Amino acid sequence: MIATDGFDIEPQIADAFIINARERYDFVITANRTVDNFYIRAKTLEINRNTTAEAILQYHGDDQNVQPTSVPRHCTADDRCVVGTSNIDCRGGTDRANSWCNNATLSNPTLANGNVPGMELLKPVRKDTIIVPSGGYVITRIKADNPGVWFLHCHIELHANDGMAMLFNESFPHHLSPPTGFLIAIVILTTYHHHLKQQPLHQ
Image (cartoon, rainbow, N blue to C red; front, side):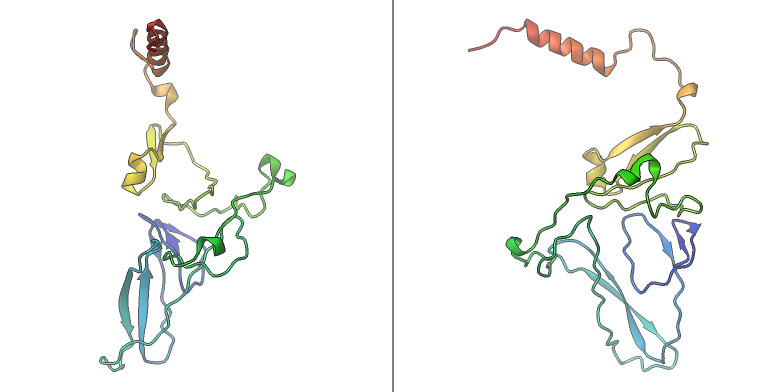
């Protein structure tokens, strides 16, 4: 792996990786095996589906009529705290009594004041799209040198429409004041609650 989202990274060796909506990765394939055909697979992580896209990487000189015989890679990922149980069938075939994750976390006083082990502050990866796992978090550093109101949102449209979005405002000094009499949410709510208090209760 040599780049992500258009920014160079320290080269990393991998035989599989997870990519999400709108992410981009650049990688170099080292073709140093004996002459043969090889599958390149892309598998979705959706529950109750087994969607796989396959391409054939064919070395020059190999028999084009022979199908690749590589074994699909089994990818796993860590949650914050995974209880040791039997294997989890992500397609829905595992009994719930044998498959569960505990989202409990521990408070560590040594992590106060930004002292988080493993946080790379010198040359962190630059990205414009980040995967946030369920129950997880991401620490970002933003250079606020482009005044404006910027939309931060989930790239799954249904999620964004349901409210997984927010605005970064790095241009407060450049904004005009609201016009006189302009309604704001607190005024509307106060008026509404006052209206409710004036209404008789119906039995």
